[in-house]
Image 1 (tube, one colour):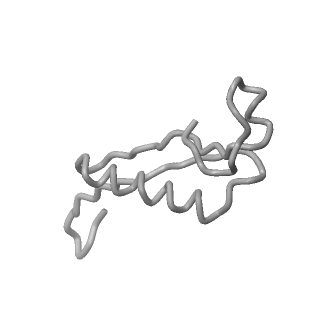
Image 2: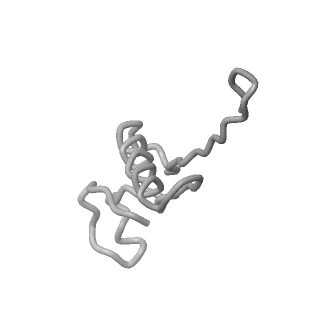
Image 3: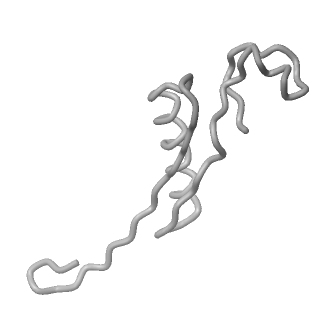
Length: 76
């Protein structure tokens, strides 16, 4: 990047979070991305961190060999 004819080095650190399914809210996704951003900033400059996918536990959780879901957030 240039400013007043001088090159200015620019770096970026970012946090990434992803989710699938209809039950994850924007607020949850935003909070996870924010947490990933601060993990990236603590790791140094010019990097990114991606958090595991958010999975909401459903009543169908027993299908995966688990117990009935309680609707709380869990990391997949």
